[in-house]
Structure formats: structure tokens, C-alpha cells
Length: 405
Ligand SMILES: NC(=O)c1ccc[n+]([C@@H]2O[C@H](COP(=O)([O-])OP(=O)(O)OC[C@H]3O[C@@H](n4cnc5c(N)ncnc54)[C@H](OP(=O)(O)O)[C@@H]3O)[C@@H](O)[C@H]2O)c1
Image 1 (tube, rainbow, N blue to C red):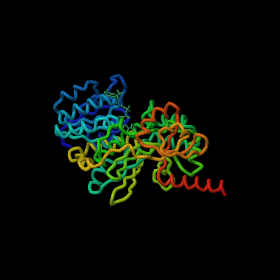
Image 2: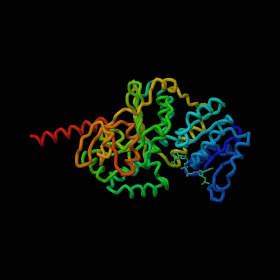
Image 3: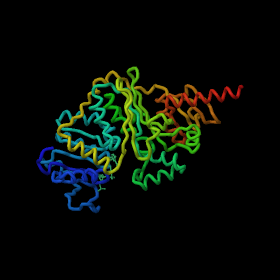
């Protein structure tokens, strides 16, 4: 960062904006801040002596400003801000995962066309510097899979439900009280937030730009007490797992509640923490854990991007190789459901357990089609990881043998 003063504009002074400002002030860089754009001029602010404005022209008509830190909650306005700033060749840092997941390809093109910078580590997995890890550490090995817990709110709720035995609604209320969940938690509990983050990681790991409407996200909002009891009876937990993997030149993606057992690192990720497993061709599996959100964990990675913006350029080194990967939704997965019969017309194979409850094999594309139906009837769907499937099916075989013994 140059020593020129007042070259930075901050948009947003909420949770992340204040976290970023904390590090800016602590490192005596606050003199670089020309202005802070917010929405509501009458809100009281701490500190209150900063140059707050509601006028974006204070930024875009000020030629001294060469760096924009975009940390607002309005994703449409965030896109306008980031687009304008990149078109002016500015250095831009953002944490707006929804906006980035919808517009990443266009924004990268603008970055390259106008010679600016676009960094967004704060958009994914809170304090875990996972984009840097993928871009730098994995530059020389081929990533074959990324799977993780990328939404702290859902993980907090699931942890409370499993460990304290409280209901889903009560756990969600607690997450809101603790400041993890938003007043409107739909994006978290319906799996959209995890999907946005997964798609950003997919671009970096596999070189593909895939937009949210083309991918599968099923959240934790339809889980039933009977699902939790089923998991507990089998020594399993349910986690909201975001996964992207390549196999035979095909790339598959999903965000799904998933049964995991104690051998899985994700089993042990509690509360608002995030965990990401990266599997690559020669290194095998590596696991990263950290705080998934919050003022200082997120503010820190945003500040780190800010400090390193001159010397960091996302290289998208996997983008050319991504051309050989075909994004595929025809792959089949095994799922459990409290009402698997509802999916009857889509199932390739089915194992009924107890009335409508059971396992089924279904194409990801068909689960995308069935999403509205599942939400309408509030039916749960939980994916079976490969080792969990083997374990559950083995039990089933034993039971059948006992019946016939
Ligand atoms: N919270 C987290 O832990 C976390 C973690 C990772 C990423 N993020 C992402 O970071 C961004 C900010 O999240 P946050 O939690 O800090 O949100 P927040 O606490 O709700 O704060 C939002 C800020 O944006 C400002 N704002 C909203 N609309 C605006 C507009 N049209 N023009 C200018 N300013 C506007 C608000 O202004 P007023 O103050 O005037 O209301 C407020 O200062 C979001 O994209 C979020 O998804 C958040």
C-alpha cells in the first residue's frame, strides 16, 4: 500500500466494516481512509468523528481514491459499486459472497480489462484464508475435491440440536441472539450462503464459473426430529456439506445436509466454526478449520487483502484447465429422506425402511427439479457420504439376514 493519504473509500460500517476499521486503526492506517459510505445518515456511529457520507459520488468523483473496500449488505448495490470501481481501474476488496457468486466472471473480466484489482478472501470461510491456500499452495497440484462446512449459522443450529437436544426453531433463535444468524436467516438455513461460497471456491479450484441457479442447494430447514434421532441411533451427525469434485473430467457440485461419521473431520466442527477439506492428486487430503464469520475474523482477512492488494493478484491458474472439465448434474447420489416416496418418479433405486422413510438413488439434476416439491411438503433430504452409505447398507443386510435366519 502506498503511503499516499486518503486514497481509500470504505462502503459499509456494519459488522465486517467495523471489523476492517478495527485493524485499519490498530495499524495506524486510518489516515488512508477518505470516506465511509453508509445508507442511514441518522444512525449513531462509534467512532463518530469519521467522514461518513451517503453519497457514492464522493467516491467515484474523487480521483484521489484508488482503493475501494466494499462491505455492504445490499448485494445489488454492491455489484454497482464494485463494477464502477473496477471500470475506473481501482483496487477493490469485497466480502459480498452473494454478489460475487452471481457476477464473478464479469468482474474478473473488468479487473483484467481496466487493470484494477479484485480480491475477496472475506467472502468465503471467515478467517480461513482458503482462496489464498487454493491459489498459492495448490498452484502446482491438481485439486480433485473440496468439501466443507461453509455456513456458520447452520452449523451452530445443528450443533445445538445434536448436543443440547433442543428443537430447530429454538436453536435458530439462539443463533440470532448470539449474532451468528441474520434477522432473515433464509439464505443460511436454505443452503444459499454455502452455495455462493462453494461456487467461488469452485472457480479457484477447478477453473469453472458456475452461477447459483445452475447448482443444487438444499438446506437444513426441512430436517425433522426423526432425522436427528435416526442419525443419533446410528452414531452419525448431520452437517450441511458443500462439495465440489472432479472425476473423469466431470465436475459435480452440491450443498446438502449430509450424514457424517466420527472418522470424518467435518463431524468434529462445532458451532459457528467452518471446516474445509481439500483433496489433491499428489498431496491427498488436507483439512483447514477456523471461525466462519464475525466482526474480527472476517475483518482480519479483509484487512489482510487490503494490506496485500499491491502484491496480490488472483491468478485463476485453474481457469484454462477448467475447460476440459464438464459441469455435470447427471451424476447420481444416495440420499435418505423422511418421505423418500415423495421423490418416487425421480428415483433410480429405492430402499424403504419404515413407511415412507428410506434411501434412494437420484440424479443431482432431478434433486434440483424436486426442490420446490420438497419445500412445499417440508420433506427432508440427507445425503449419505460413501463410508456412511456402506455402513448403513451393511446394517440393513444384517437385519434382512436376521429376519430370514
Ligand atoms: N457478518 C459476517 O460475519 C460476514 C462474514 C463474511 C461476509 N459477510 C458479508 O459482508 C457484507 C457485510 O455484512 P455485515 O454483516 O457487515 O452487514 P451489516 O452488519 O448488516 O452492515 C451492512 C452495512 O452496509 C451498509 N449498507 C447497506 N446498504 C447500503 C447501500 N445501499 N449503500 C451504502 N451502504 C449500505 C449499512 O449501512 P447503515 O449502517 O447505514 O445501515 C451497514 O453499514 C455482506 O455482503 C455479508 O454477506 C459478512
